[in-house]
Each structure stands twice: as C-alpha cells, then as structure tokens.
Amino acid sequence: MLIPVYKPKIKTSQPITKTVVTWPEDSSLQLQDCFQRTIWDVFYDLDIETYTSAVLCYIKTCIENVTLTKRIRVFPNRKPWMTKEVQLLLNERNAAFYSGDSERYRVARRDLKKGIKRAKAAQKGRIEEHFSTRDPAQMWHGIQQITNYRGNRTVSTDGSISRAEELNHFFARFEVTETEQTFAAVADQPLALREHEVQQMFRSVNVRKAGGPDGIPGRVIKSCAYQLAQVFTKIFNLSLALATVPTCLKTAIIIPVPKQLNITCLNDYRPVTLTSVVTKCLERLILKHIKARLPADLDPYQFAYRAHRSTEDAIITALHTVLQHLDQKGTYARLLFIDYSSAFNTIVPSRLIMKLLNLGLSSSLCMWIRDFLTKRPQAVRLGQHLSSTVTLSTGAPQGCVLSPLLYSLYTVDL
Image 1 (spheres, rainbow, N blue to C red):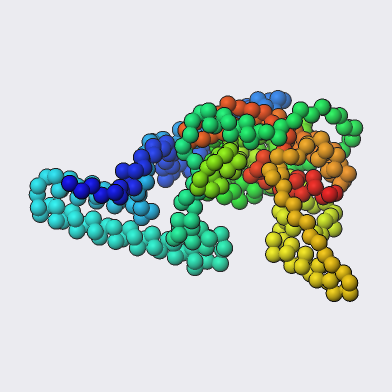
Image 2: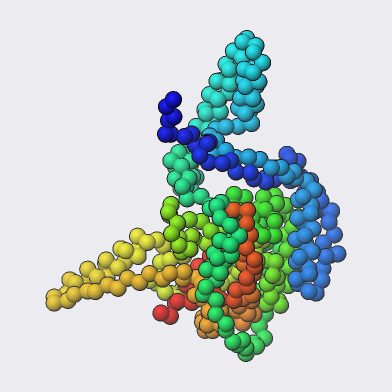
C-alpha cells in the first residue's frame, strides 16, 4: 500500500484553543447606562495608586458582567470565509451523510454549496471595500488579506515558561543601576487637562488595537467616552500634579514576535509592548502639549518620528547636500551610516530629564516623564506562558506613544 508523502495541514498542525470574549448587541448600551449611574467620587483616594486601581477594577467588573467568555478551537486550515452559517450547513451535511438518507444528504449538500458561495462573495466584497477608499491603511489591510503577508510572521505560540523567562531578561539587558538624582524644585503650574479633551481623545481610540494588562479594551473606552471622561480626567490631573504614574497604568506585557522564519537566537524576536489603552490616551494628550512647547527649528534634519517626514525625504536631502558639495571643483564626500540596535532601551531617564529641562519644558512635566520611565513592571507572554515580572528604570517601552519623541529629544544634541 502506497502512503503519500504529503500530509494535510490539519494533520501536521494541531488546532489552537483560545479563550475569546463575546459582546452581545446591547453590551455597549448596558455599560453606558452602568457608568452613567455610577457615583465615581466613592472611589476617590489621596493615594493615586489606590484611586486608579479601584476605578479600573470596577470598570473591569462591569465588563465581565455584560460579556460572555467561551473557549474555541482554531484549526490551521480554517478559511477566512468560514462563518457560523457555513459551519452549521457543514454540520448538517455531515449529519445527513451519516443518517443514510440520500434525499436529505442531497439537499444538505446543495445548501452547503450555496452557503459557501455566498460566504466567498461576502469575503470578496469586504476585501474590495479596502480598495474603494482613499485610506492607505485600509488598502494595505486588503493587500495583507489577499496575500496572507503576515501569515508567516504571527505571534509565536510555541515555547515554555523557561523560554519566556529568558526573553524577559534578554529584553531587560540594558537595565543599569542608576544613582538617584535630585533636581532643583521649581514652582511651576502642572499641566491640567480638560474633560472635553479627554473625551475627544477617548472617542478617537482605535478599537482594533490590542488592550493592555489592565483588561480594559479600546471598544469600551471609545463607546463609553462620555461616561468615563470625568473620572479619568481627575485621575490624569492628579497624576500630573503629583508627578506620579500609577503602577497599574505603566505595567507592560511584551509579546515576542519573530523577525524571521528561522529563529536562531533571542535577538530574532521583536518585543511588542502592550500597555493600557487609557495610558496611551494620556500619552497622546501630553505629546500634544510637549510638541507645542518645543522650538519650531529644533532639528531640521530629524526625519524619524515626525509628521510629514519620511525616509525618502532623508535620502533626497542627503543626496542634494552631497551633490551640491561635489559641484565644487576638487571636492569629495564620505558618508558614515550608523545603525543603533535597541535604541529606545538605551535611554537614561536622568540624562533625558536634564535635556528636557534645557529645552524649556516645565519641571513638573519632566518629573512626570521620569516617573513614567522608571519602576516599570514588565513581563513576557509566550503563547499561554507568562514570565515573572521584572522592574525596569532604563529605556522607553517600544510601542508607547511618547517613546519616539523622547528618543528624538534624547539624541537631539548629537
């Protein structure tokens, strides 16, 4: 008997069991009504850690009361057009086959073919919608779906708890023990945010982004922006006034994503940091304030992490400068290219604060940034394994809103 060498994908790869949260149709309305009737002042505490933790725990409890949790199995050969309707038709076809009723089987097989055809047409329509808009992000998302571009670079699900511990210590390898430095206290007015600013920022949350360790998804922040803006405005302003970031808002979970197909060393993983959606909103508000205080001509040759700037602009500027120099007789040019590895992880907070103070930022905001970057709990999640927590006080977390700007300001005098 000949046995084929090829094995179907469903036999070579085991199905993955996941725990998913389902949202009933009226879940958003229930949360809005719950938060609207909540007396948030009962959670107030002078200790910002206690205050913030109590509010987040209450919101998480409300979410658990209106959502359903179930475990599903995801098969490796599952098609993107496979819907619940098609799955039911498939089950009916299989049941008809085992029943021995030929007429029932014929009808079920016909209905299954029609259902698959409708599902494929609907999937085709969803993909084509990405190309009918002028949004480049939507178009790129459509290309990824057609080509399965990210299929081979998904988050690693294989590994053990020991591997997660190794990665956690590897990502924290730049940690250095820094002597505590004191800065001269300057009596300045701390940044104060307004409720409508927080509400507007909550409404702009991208619900497709993953949530953070606090368990508050973006869809709750976005749909309940009006109800949650008041309490979080108080938390944000208290944090800015005390120059203290609650630990629960700066805790990070790192998801190691393979940079390439064949993993040979720990450096082949890219650390993707998941932080609280609430923290990201606060960061964006502070980012807007910092940019408004910086000089307009800070560094005209800084192209990274700046709006309306790209790598093409950097190349064009470099070529123009070199060619303009070479137009002079008897001249030559030499270019030096330097690649910084794990650049964000090398930021020393005390040095950064000195540079921010020299740039004219208020001392209260600088102290808040220092607290934001120091004593940050971090753990690595590898599949279903979660490493122990390490505390970092060096570098800026990759994936945070403020990190790119802080690194640009950290290197502005180079």
